[in-house]
Image 1 (cartoon, each protein chain N blue to C red):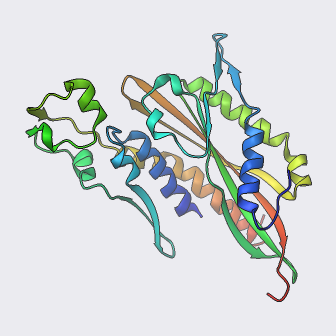
Image 2 (image 1 turned 180 degrees about the vertical axis):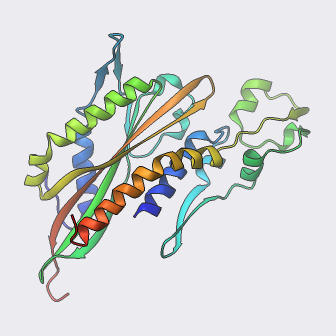
Image 3 (image 1 turned 90 degrees about the vertical axis):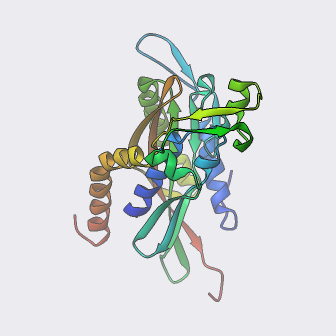
Length: 120
Length: 154
């Protein structure tokens, strides 16, 4: 099914792009099929929206960071406040890449459907 | 290797996986050789930012559906997707070419195991920049058909 293939492509591409500091974000990207002819790519992590859409740069305390390897590497486990400003969109670029492949995908499934229905 | 009805999914996956292990390396235009570092069934998240872990070959889980074939048989229509992740676009292209060739030359064996009409269904491309390097993905999707005998009385 073209919808299934397209949504899985977007999922795969988004996982490739998602920041992997704790891997929670990438693991939270799922594809569901709630009803016929409908596929949904969902980001279940609460901070997904902020990585995608951005946020106002702000200070956070290191105690608020949970499970980050990068934090240990960069700050050596020191406690205090750090400035957070970087965000990485991952869904829109994945969707854009998927749309590049979409015409081929539709063409392929159309050809297959025509063939299955007895056409040439 | 045989493919049985009860374990059709794992049997087919293992058959394809074993075949893909014969795709090991490719030679690039600059005469360097690129060798696959990891064969796996799902992308190894922990390795994503480690440049030396690439190329990574992923044989994704199968997708299967049934259709009626005869009064006594069902036809399983399935597909499998192989992704190759590399840090060089050229090696990604060459690995995909090697993967397609590997499956194409194995079609007679697959047919002997009951997998008919193994065909290249389509390909796709993707790339993303992570840290200090770019990851290139080349996807290859194959379809196949397999017939199973229905359980008596169903």
